[in-house]
Amino acid sequence: MIILVMGVSGSGKTTIGTQLAEALHWSFYDADSFHPPINIDKMRHGIPLSDVDRLPWLMALQQAIAGWLQSHTNTVLACSALKSEYRQRLCLSQQVKQVYLKGSFALIQQRLQQRQGHYMKADLLQSQFDTLEEPEDAIQVDIDQSPSAIVMQIRKALNV
Image (cartoon, rainbow, N blue to C red; front, top):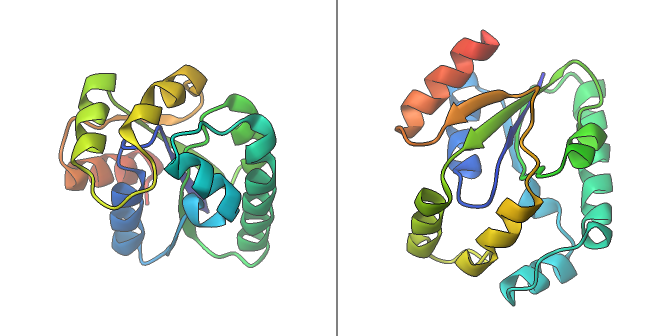
């Protein structure tokens, strides 16, 4: 099974994904590590990514997911997956489950302003919310609770 933990930057994807993978003894990957250097440079300079920018990233993620599915490697993937078309590219089978970390703009903006050493700047948050197409077919979790409570909620919803 692949658990796709998705949401805007600052919603807690890496924190929750890491803790979930550790609790399940599964592999964890952060989709940010699949971005080509030019995308990271753009985000570092406050330039929102276009769909054209995201295409090589999505293709790399799609290839990775296909490999994990083929090798039966249970994996948690933290990935923004903001648009429905992105998620359609990544959900290659029924074995890919989506978890949407949902939070208010104000809460996430506060988190981003406190975050140190990340290339994604708080001023790009509005572009993330503008791009976000909330999934209808995902497990939806409110991020206004502790990481351990969120992980427990996800495990219960997925029965893992």
